[in-house]
Image 1 (cartoon, rainbow, N blue to C red):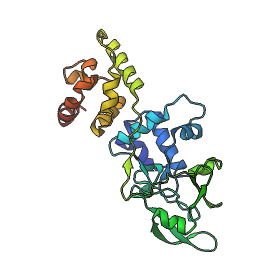
Image 2: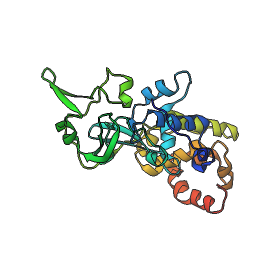
Image 3: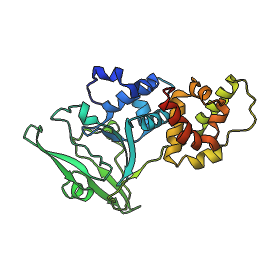
Image 4: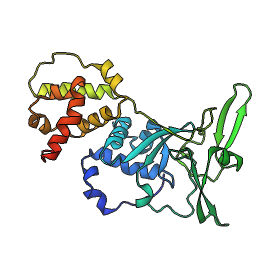
Length: 278
């Protein structure tokens, strides 16, 4: 964990103001866990233990809301075997200390960032961009093979300061395949239980009868679509007020149905935004 700057403008940011207070706290906490490039391992359970050890807060759902929020406050991706969270515009708002260790996590193209340092380990020049192989060849990341099970493990230099140092017994572990030039964005787990809870709560409040069970299989199938995740990210933030449900002349049970999602995402929501309802 590291000390980071919080600017007054944060409290007036419209994108952040739409978030639940716990989600805002999660966003700030990610800054403290991130390395000097704004990256940290995508490990929701570890994040929960570090930031919310005494709170009943769903970090995975919170990360989803940060990911689909307007402006995309974070990005989640998998590349070179690393599962990474990257804070959007991190270096625009943060000024890491000159002695803070270099990142041992790649960007979305699988490229690592290094800096030249003086005898006091203070950044003297850079940045230098290296591939995973170059990181290994230069000894920044050491890959060892255990012959018994042929697993590859990655160890870090002793003076490295990265989120994984919170648990030195758990090294970064890339798979055996080589790093590709393009990363695969990580699709977060479908929070279908939360989706069903929203369905039931809003239908009950509207006095409507629950005419059918939540279509879990259909929701899981559609979750792979980016537009569907963004649609539900918006619902998680706004639908509790059900204002747009009324303006759309539809009950919440209709808006929440999976089969209606595409129409509302592509037609109804843009129309209500244009009219200033949202």
